[in-house]
Image 1: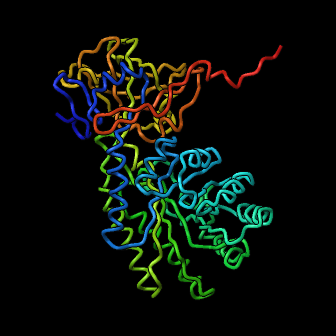
Image 2: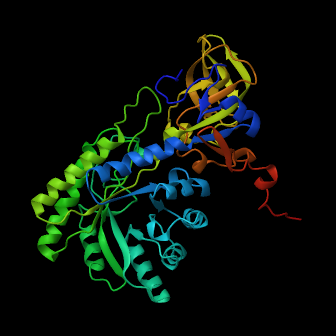
Length: 436
């Protein structure tokens, strides 16, 4: 049996499985809360992007956006799948280097890069820096002189003025954004003129990212139209032809029955077609196309397991069921009002008898994981599995209420491996100093 709309089977004991393993046994072995990833699904998602480009004979790079979930083990899987990698901080870059990820396949993003970050990137020979503002250009010039490095590959991030159909906090391609150079007010062209013949910079092309959790392709097509409108002008005025066009990521996944994401190959096929049309019109060589999937590679591959604790029934209003985690291991419901689906993992085939609200254990009224969940009769100690928590759960976890971070386990073909240890209380206070 497979849970409706989710690729996770139920065994003959009525227990949810992932990667060929019983979730109840995983919880017994590693404790809860517990993040569990099916690595075979990660590989399948990555290959759906890579293989579509190969099938269509288009030069491309698929860069895993590591902000979705970064750990040494995850980046090793990305390396095995021959992905490139996006990082947005020294910490993410450090993790990549510790994972022995090929430096030439790493791209550095960020709207407020420090001189230390740029220096670290250049010293380690990463493949590309995505320039987000004029300050980036100044810092690259400074670091280039300090290190004696030249011809540093860069892309320019631009905001094409496209408003994607998503939550306002994750719209990044509209004009009023902290990211990138605006195409509408001339800043992008000004930056282009600074970088085109810069002695320290090799300007490879343009980058844009219009948002996240996007379920249609129209926004990406409009963004491509805006980029090529600018590129056509630069071709006429400056004889510039881009080597690379990076159209970002943001491809949506299914969290609940309300979500209807497209197959990943459809996004790729329609992006390629949009670019090809403009290339033919301009009569220029086809640029290498880069994309940056993050959530769409790991989001639906992960579940989070919790143990059910207290229950509070308010007659005529609702029944609260509390778990041993919450906003400290998944901030998205509190931050974005994100919605999730879940199942009682040890009673996955039992008949539904009730509707409850899943509360976290943090001391916040807003610490609610799911407001209305259909469940069978539940008891203290039952196991809750929340689906599609592979992206922006572990990576956005906090120590609020001094709660330690949960462990992460990878499962693949019936085998399990601990890849991030559960924090201890000693870990939580390790950087505290006394004041006596």
